[in-house]
Amino acid sequence: MPALKAVLWDVDGTLAETERDGHLQAFNQAFARLGVPWRWSEARYGELLRVTGGRERLLHDMESQAQAPAGQQERVALVEAIHREKNALYATIIAAGTVALRPGVRDLIVDCAAEGVAMGIVTTTSGGNVEALLDTHFGENWRSLFSAVVCAEEAPRKKPDPLAYRMALARLGLEARECLAVEDSPAGVASAGGCGVPAIVTRSHYFAARAVPGALAIGDSLADVAGWHPAARHGAPRIDLAQLGRWHAGEARTGRSVSRNG
Ligand code: XBP
Ligand code: MG
Image (cartoon, rainbow, N blue to C red; front, side, top):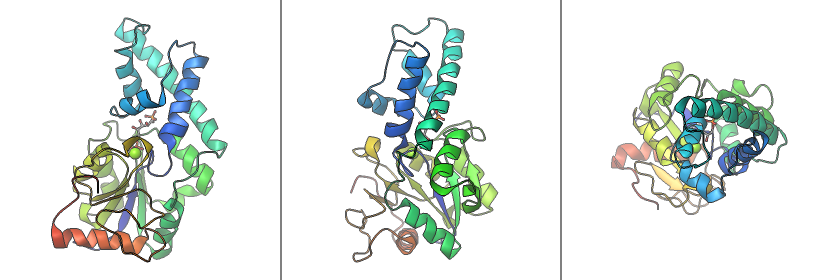
């Protein structure tokens, strides 16, 4: 296995609990503002997350909403209106600063920046949502931290399609096996794996109970070395760059990845 040269970050669920605390809230606020007569519960949103992409998720849900418009054209128009409104509301929620970064994320980003390990953002959420989150938590110069930023607009085929990771590799000029993805969902790990990028998983609210086939390591939090499978080295205060390097190098030794929750 070549040396670890870049860490590629997923956004929703990985950097922050943005699905439950940001997108879901904003979708429901958008429904209310536009007079749409349904709301999504936390549990229903969890089911809908099987469909990646906000527009795709809305359109899919309309298939089971009795009060949705009957025609496809009307549905698509309503989806566009809701999605635009949702993203504006999402930006307001995020800018208020109440949706924190997940524990350990900032420290690991600082590790990478300090040690010259490149970073990328690889997400199929809209660019404006990424801007809102990173601007709030890292300031307006956040782009200087990342050598590649790939969002939904550039990669219209959403995860689990590997397009977003393939684009990030091309921009970084790196081989897949020189990189490590940090993801929270089966679709994210499948997207990375689809072009050969190994991935670790930090379980998020919505994917806590899901098996994640193909992950190199799975655990609850980057801020805690306990509970990871395969085990992280004990004694360290958190999952740091050295631990990522060990998992990354370990793949070459074992040729195995984790196919179940540890
Ligand atoms: C998550 C997604 C997105 C978000 C909503 O992407 O699938 O669709 O749920 O954002 P990732 P949009 O985990 O790759 O960050 O409404 O902009 O699609
Ligand atoms: Mg995610």
